[in-house]
Length: 189
Ligand SMILES: Cc1cc2nc3c(=O)[nH]c(=O)nc-3n(C[C@H](O)[C@H](O)[C@H](O)COP(=O)(O)O)c2cc1C
Image (cartoon, rainbow, N blue to C red):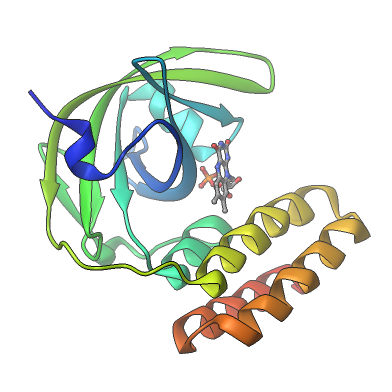
C-alpha cells in the first residue's frame, strides 16, 4: 500500500510528468496536473498522445521532478527512448526524483477525459531541500501558455510567456534560463 503523502502529493494539483506507453511500445512523457481532492486522485487529460496511450494501456507513471528543462522538453517535443527506464513494463524517467505508477480508469469525454488514478507502486530516488524559486515557477507558468500557443496560435499567449520570461531572467538560475531558451525555440518554429 502506497502512502501518496510520502511522495509530496498533497491536496490540490501537483504538476508532474506523466509517462505512458503506446500500443507499439513507444514511451511518451508529458506534464500533467495530478489532482488530489477529497480522497480522490485523478487527472483531466485533453486529447493527446498521453490520453491515447492510457486508453490503450491503462497504466501511467507520475514522475516527480524539479528540472525545468525536462518539463519543457516533455511538453513541447519528444523525450528520447534512452531517457526512460521500465518498472513492470511501465516507462518512468531516469532522472526523476521519484515516481508513482497508477492504474487508470478513464471516463472518456469529447475534449477532456477524467482519469481516476489508483497507486500501485512507487519509488523515491532522491530527497532534497527545495527552497521556492520564482524563476522555476515562472517557467512552469510560461510553459502552460506555450502549450496553448502551439495549438491556438493566439498572440495573448506570447504576451503571457514574455511576462513570465522577465521573472525567469530576474529570479531563475542557468537551468531555468536554458528551459526558457528551449521554450522559445519550440514556439518560434
Ligand atoms: C505544467 C503543465 C501542466 C499540464 N497539465 C495538463 C493536464 O492536466 N492535462 C492535459 O491534458 N494537459 C496538460 N498539460 C499540457 C500537456 O502537457 C501538453 O498538451 C503536451 O504537449 C501533451 O503531450 P502528449 O501529446 O505527448 O501527451 C500541461 C502542461 C504543463 C506545462
